[in-house]
Length: 408
Image (cartoon, helix red, strand yellow):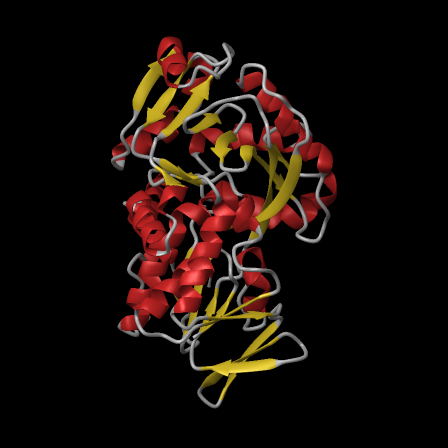
């Protein structure tokens, strides 16, 4: 099995395949788990079934796009390129479609916290999965009411939600500022305290099972003589099966086979503070600002924002530094010094669902990409799903809505 992409989804899928007896080679120009998989917010959100395109959220989202300092931003120079994706995004917000998407995401994400806890124990880093819940906060009831539809959908699919007032918030997290007075506590959700080390641990366990890592950016793939041939322009590798798990770069590979997949990068940022002076016990989400604050092993990570822009444009430093202002609003007297900043490419499809499973009419070509903001959460279950499909050599998808068919 040739796996293109060694992010968290590629790693989890390859590890499950190796456990099932497959010989796996992973191809990536960067070290395993070092890109978007290392810089995410670290949230494990098994109940996050509400798509980004919720019916009531579309108007707010389109307003945010033109706000340079808002949680969602689309620079003017990228409006034309993004227009087809935005059109499909709006279509995905129809009520019936949202209900279908939520059901599909529930099937993929259910029990994902337990899946990660089991995986972390298997690969020797059980301490990295912290099961202390998540705290999602709003400044007041009016701000919270904007997300009523989203919370209702999550509760419908079994997410346990405990509503909290200012007193309960302070009891859970004294470091939260008085700006946030209402919210929800999700006792069954979790987080990862070091996503990069988690990826490295999975990679080490994969190597122990015979997995091979090859430093190469795969730029082409073709099929002949009952085999797939992939190349980085200078070298070629051949195998019977190929898995495309290249994150935001996956669409370009499929274009060579005639598939037009509406995959874009939603560029995400984080600021990490090595000595923040703030003590938290769990992820705190400033839900009105779409910002996740995670106390990690190497400092306090403030992550969030969506910037829809070219995959080739450099990091926007001012966009990253906005996160410090959010931290100042959400926490009591944080020390906002000596920060490191990061930007990564979330692979996002307009319906908020990944592409998983076999590619029709392309024997032994498989997909595992497009998880958007839920790559870490969905990675462990994605690996299990693909390993089951390959074990029975079935082109039928366990979750039909996640098939690439929907874009053909």
